[in-house]
Length: 262
Image (cartoon, rainbow, N blue to C red; front, side, top):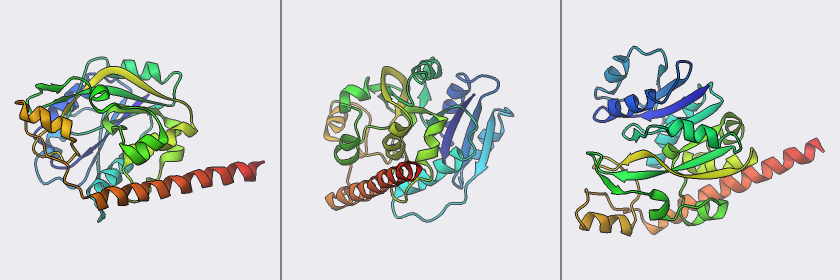
């Protein structure tokens, strides 16, 4: 069984296109769990119009967070706690899945605990800006690279075996959910990069993702508008320090459990 966990908040503009692309990838017994963080637009009415038993809508009680990504992490955690599948996918509300995504990633999960597929950056009209995130951002697997240098673990491009949740949940406070899942998944098994683009990763005016200088250069060459990363150096160092401390505590906890068993 496959569970797709989606976090939504005022995503009415693009969500139907995304949900359609996901449902086309799922079987009759799979599920799409959507946790909504109090949308005030027509997101919920669009979702309820499907009348599809595979779609399960959860209302999430928003809790104040120190950082914006904390709201996303809390919303995803709510969805994940209701997931019943053997294989779990994460989804944003405004992207589009490419045909064959589920088949390719589930095949990779037969020998891995976690898989991250490539994706293509597109604008609001799905025009391709960057064909490969892997090449563009030099995405690689590795704890220290993704924890301290640049995290390439994009949640909406990952899938993992259910056993990963045993280690990943609950998410540490003030740590991005996708980074944390990628850091904890090796406790279950190996991590794999799938060099197949399985998603159109939409970038538009309402995104809040960080953007590096190379992507801004794409904008100057005629691509769609991107919001630059205006996070301060202090913020970048602080959030990495928080994530590092959480990861060290996680490692110590795992070691202590092994020692007690022996």
